[in-house]
Length: 477
Image (cartoon, rainbow, N blue to C red; front, side, top):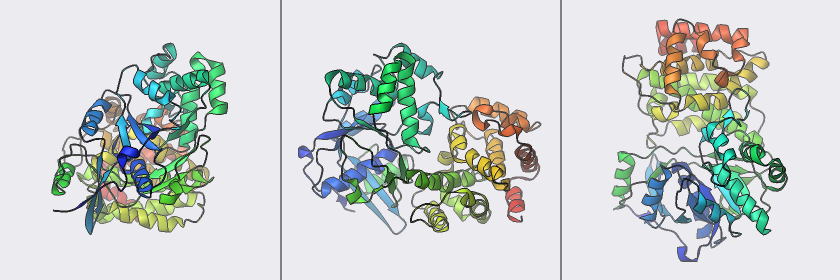
């Protein structure tokens, strides 16, 4: 039987210093692993993690992890070998409650010096049309009306900060680990923006006194299903929530932690004032690249990402769009060659062991497109360039949301706004402008005549000739 690496430290000696909200697969394959490595060096045992969640669904993860003493199984999927470890950096999981009382109490404890989050790209209440915090979101309006019984992570953070301020305890650092441009700034906008709705003076205090470091995170981590549970069983583990991931991982952080932090630089984390450059590289090239392969793969009926990469047309389309349109508008990154980074991304996407699904990459386009694709379209057009590949990709997203692939098979709902997207995609078949007139996604791009004409032509061509022919035409220049 394959061996499993166990924590190389006394877990009983760990003390919590971090509350992490959102115990999904990515967190357990990323931040929790970095801390596990650090603890294994005999360092910083007062920075263990207390897990937390603010959604009813988080309670199931809590139950599963508490049943195994908060140990997470993490299996690295190298094409030549699988390696399993039990990650022990989390020491507890706070009860999930509608009013978040237990979470607020835990964050009020002076020993907690960092509150971190993975609440997904769409969890920050950003208005896609403006790029700013949306104070009219129903969850935010509800928290502003009852700040003592918050339902959101940001409301709970504010309630804990109020208690700490009243008790004379310094505020914790709030660290987003989500995949967003300027994630620290976005988090600060959400926390201070919510506070401003009920207590403007406290909002000013938050903006002045609470640190929100920016960070770039990266590790491909598929969803857990029967395949992943079977892998855990191969290692002799019965675990309902194992995590699988690629061997690669990266974390780049702004060193802005007034209450201190773990010595994460000792386990490979890059601390730099240039996080924005790293995140622009990753979001445009990697996350944008995911979208570039996802929708043609979805239309062709592919199940796995490595199938997309084995498709010569999709692989060539990815390389061409990255080379012609994306890399020229990505700012320089200290110590990084962008073409080498692109080659690394293509290699990572091609790893068949990861078995990441095309459906996962197609998920939640209404939140992801405005962050990963549409900004690149804007920048290419602003520079006087040709955004034909990115425009075609956007048309393929529209065609995907029609809900039927090119073989005639139904595409199951795959977006929180699926009903609206499907109805709009249906209307766009005869009137392509209907799609790009969704201003909460595209902003004012529909008013750009170059983009509007290019999108209409690309969508019409897709319907008439299919994704394969449309990509071949683009590749031919």
